[in-house]
Image (cartoon, rainbow, N blue to C red; front, side, top):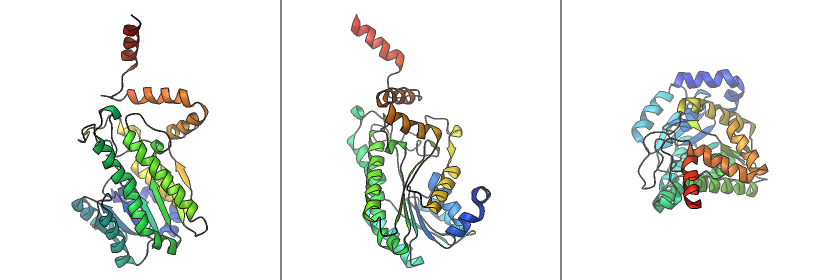
Length: 301
């Protein structure tokens, strides 16, 4: 896997990224799988000094040993919903490398349930991991990022621009990250801090398998065809290219970009389109068109 990720990045962007990221110190949260793992692997391939953060110490240990063949890589077991864990992540990074150039706030969880059926602890959990995890890590890393005039990245989603039905907690947390980082950018407009809000579309990863249901249990199986989605490697490579260019925002996939345009131009129509799109998922919590039409007929009778 490491060789594939490394060659993928080199073939796409070659020496530009290698020159830019060489010897930079980068922290990646949620680094044990998906976009986080792909990002950390590419950074190591570009000879950045990488700090892996996630909850699974066994996975982090194995990944760090593999990536150490490419660059200087360490891991810090971190639950980003715990403030002290995030403080420790930054402290351990400074102890080892003495600086921070890039913070990728990637750790996150999703959900799939209607709000009327939802245990409120599910939303609390999503806000703790997705939003507060970003806030905690950014807060403790900020003095070092300001010193290096570095980059802080928040991985959101198109759900951070347009609410997705069945994902109230997920959308709320991603909207919150969007607003938080947008404000942070304004506060440090003249300090050289680079703030990027990064919104992939549906990406091939395990986030849907670990998505929380109404009662807080994990979904277990993805309702979507993962193989037809953009790969984590591709998402990671585009992210690094935008970090190098110090982009403010990046939204991926044709569907994601189209959704934003349609939302601005035809908000009511887009709401209906979005509902039916999500209702097509297997075991969707939404009523299908046939069920709605049946209810309407019964009501008319």
